[in-house]
Length: 341
Image 1 (cartoon, rainbow, N blue to C red):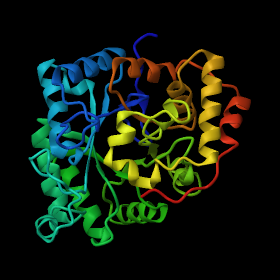
Image 2 (cartoon, rainbow, N blue to C red):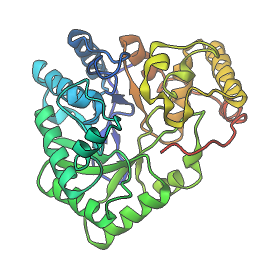
Image 3 (cartoon, helix red, strand yellow):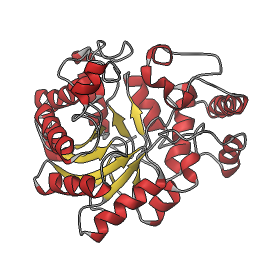
């Protein structure tokens, strides 16, 4: 395939890669055992993807306590990648610390006290977190997204602070991740009412095994031309392998508990089996089939790339063409699930 062309991103003039490289898997094993920490290996993966045309990256300050952002910045610097040729997306909300093994989920009284003002979407934490991300990246962010909605902070305070980090040049745009449709809509309304910058993308869990945002959030986003950048389009790798097979990440990732991803029900098993069936019929990988489905829903999926082979599998999703009947066949067994927030 020739060099991938960048695509218009929602209701903006920004152009991004049709598939976004997820950088959560790049960082420190002190943070999580499944994370890749070999700089040389990571840089080879990123350079291979860059040369193919995958030049949009999604990270977060919380990933390996900032190490993921540092690695991405080092890659750009070491390979002398022109800044204007890439798009960097990062996120803020959760507490982070320069020590990679710092436990952000610790609930000891001391940890709760220490984290009280470095968690959430207060003006203080938004501005400080944005500045810290820019420092670690060694450059501005193109899109800074809020990792969650914060029930403890007035939405007006959050949206004003997000507007200000754009005005201050820390980021060019803002986006949002993992929240109720009502929260997303209310924040957009507040921004529009005050003539502040609005969210340009919505990043939430979306894949063949989790489609709950099709009820409200996705229709709203499409109606208003807000870009969809789903995380976990392969359900943390569950859609990449036959029923019963697992991976190191499946066993070791502390975030697998979100949405009970490890709890595979009979409906999930049937969908996974159908993905495998179509992949065999098409002589391609399960990941390619599952990603194709997400892309055809009008999304820019965020995909973890732990190996060069994974890049090729992702790009192949832009080349295959499933029939309408095959798409329906993949969707038929789906049963509603609890919301993932």
